Every structure is written in structure tokens, then in C-alpha cells.
Length: 444
Image (cartoon, rainbow, N blue to C red; front, side, top):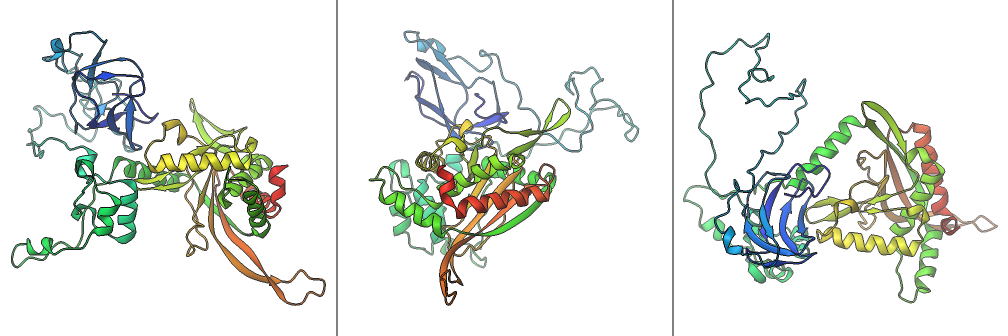
């Protein structure tokens, strides 16, 4: 079992893309693995032949480093491995236990060694010695084979899932017509609610009015990290109304002269502006770290901007690295590429783990005037961007009479008070507002 992310300690086996006896070339997808971050394709990087699969699809919580398959060189007799077992490969170790905040200390000795010296076997002041082993309890396991993520949920394309969420279509009631009964966008469009669920319910009992959807590993990770962020990072918020009239005119002029080579978005300008502000107020481009028992504030020399992207399986934050040294066209190209691969589940771990600052833009939703975002740890700041509104302001004509329309957007910065004092957060917002309202500074 490979470690597909720095925090991964175990994984679930999804669908094997190769069978025993198949030849493998570098870059071939061997198996789908569900990590604590996402469901990812494991690409094998050597030539060889898959001789034996030791862990079938649906196996859960396989510890990193445990054998899952046997690879041999081409020309090796694969039939000799037909009776090869997991024990023949060295056996397996159990995945590490989940950390508990109530544990006072960690044991350097397993609890079941029989030496009676590990913390779990030593008597404590509050617990008397026990002369006999605890009564064995019957397992509540159903005994059935564990299902893969693809089996637990219907197979559905990302575009179809997005459309289903938009229309409120219950995915489990849709019959897929694509390859391997995969649900397509056309299936969602043709779906008509039926009465089969109600008619099949026992007489005298009402049909369920809800559906319990198991939380994916990625959803659990998002929940844990953001809960940790809110509990451990003292957030404070600084908001400002920013004029984007000049920025929109510059964007229109640049796109008109691009000859189809690029198409800049407002978000591309805001990403660049956030990097400029981070260079002028470097305290914001920092993170809180604990290294070898010592607490430090790490101030980064480059600005790597994490861009929040909504995907069918949850929020992802792919990173545009070294934004301070990139032009707008390069930023635009990277954002489009990273966003597409994020929605397709094709990002590599190094493309979404890290970053020094985050921007979350909900401006495409005309109903969102403003919002506040949760800091993405260990970063110390995130910028939330609302939609653009036309606002009447006093005319800039010499007579001063009348009004004119100004395009404005409300931005809200969330900052970690452990790292960034309030005045520093306010200074960052001022620098950001200055460069956005004078967008030519971005190209200097």
C-alpha cells in the first residue's frame, strides 16, 4: 500500500484496473485507492507483470506498507504465484490507531506483548487489578465483504453529479445507461420521479423522508481540518468594499487583444493582487509551526496561492505556486488546468497540499454579497470574495452633479491572530484594495 499523501496511514482498495497476468508499463493505472484526502489512481512507475492480487477490491483500512499485490519481471512464470498468499509476502501489520486527545502518553511497547509493562496493562490509582481477562464480546460485524467507494455509491460522471445536485435528483434512484451502468448527464436529464419506493413500502408504514449518505474519507478530513482550524486558530475578520471598474476595463482590453491565446477572469487578477499584497505585507504570508518542540512563525519568501475549487466530492484547494513572479496569462492557464483536474479527481498530492495563502471566490453566484471563510491551516490568512455589484456614486465630473455607476465587490479577509495582529491584517487589506483599484500596478 503506497503512501499517496503525507498524512496517509492507511487506505481502502477500490477497483483494480489490472488483472493477474497483465503487463504493466510506467504510468499505467494499477488500482484505485481511497485515501484520507480523495479517491486517487495509483500509477505504477516500473515495467513488470501483475502476478497476484493479495488485497481484493473493497478491502478497507489497509496500512501503508502492507502488501497488496505481487509484481514480477516480464518472462517470469506467473502461474507459480497462483497459490501465493499474504503470509508468503511477509504478512501485514494493523493500521496505526487513531490519535485521541484524552491520551496522556504514548506507549513505546505494544499493549498485547504479555510483558504486563505497557500502559494498558499497568494498574492505575483509579482502577483495581484484574485477575482475569475481560469477557469476550461478540462482534457486530455482518461478515459481509467490505464494499469499495464505487460500490457504496452509484457510478456517476462528475458533470452528472453536479447536475443531480443542482436539480435535487436522488442519485440512487437513477438507472445508469453508460458503460458499466455509469450514470450520465443524459440519465439525470431524463429522470422522472417514480412511485416505486412508495408502492413497495409495507402497508401501514410511511416511506422514509430522508436518505443517509455515508461520509467519504475526504469529507471526514475536511470536517476534521476545518473544525481544528476554528478551535485552534483565533479568527478575526477584516472587510472592505473595493472598486473593480478599472480592473474590468483592463480585463476587457487584454482579452480583446489576446487573439484567443488566453481569456482572463476577474479571479486571475485577484490572485495576482493577493500575491502583491503578500509581498508588501509579508507577515500575512506566514504560518504557525511547531518544530522539535519549538514554536516558530515561518515567513515564506514565495507566494503560493491556494485557490478554492468546488468539486463533486468536496472542496479542493489546488495551488498556483510563485504567483508573485507570474504574469496574468500564466496564472489564468494554471487555474483553468488545476480546476479541471481537481473536478476530475486527477490532482497529485503536491498540487493541493501546502500553499501560503488562500483565496475563495463565490462571485459567480449573484446572490452572494459577502461571506467569511475558514482559514486553511497551517496558513494564517484567507480572502473571501463576493459578487460584483453596480453601485451609484457621486459623479466625477467637474460640476459634481449627478451620479455614475461603479462596479464594486466586497472582500473579507480571515486572519489567524496567533500570527497576524489586527493592524497588520488591516494593512494587508489596504494594500490589496490599492492594487485592485489601480490594476496597472500588477503588471509593473
